[in-house]
Picture 1 (cartoon, helix red, strand yellow):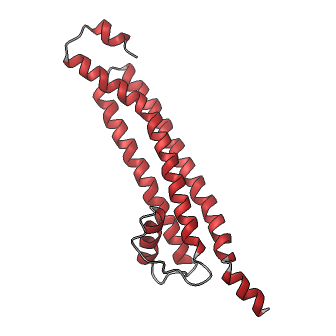
Picture 2 (picture 1 turned 90 degrees about the horizontal axis):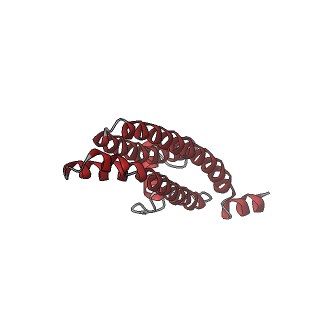
Picture 3 (picture 1 turned 90 degrees about the vertical axis):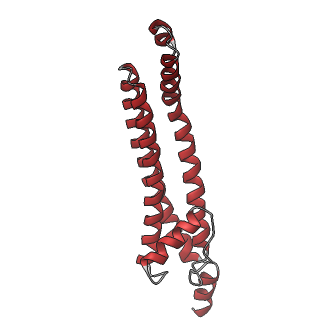
Length: 169
């Protein structure tokens, strides 16, 4: 029995189990947030373009980017809460700080997880890298309407005739 406990601890089995569960939770949260933010941006920016409120598209874009950023902060907090609730770290502040250091792959904190839980840091880092890549792809798709509005604003500044501006999609 003691050998099995040692082997499980040495191979970080508990970390894999908690990590897999939390990875699913965090990725579902991330996907829902990305979908909601990008969907709302797409609809709102399309309507603003139709109303020729080009500067408002920029505001909408930057608000959406900020919300995407905040979704990552929320995911760091979710990871931090898990570390704290499973009593892997002594206080909530250290748990969130460690989660943030690991999630961003900055690694500015040393690994303070207990023995048997070290692999969890790798899983947190993987979730962050995957989430950042996913967010980047959504941000790239969001730039279409932003670029269109930006170009139309500058066409108006050049005092081009409205029929030329309207033909630019």
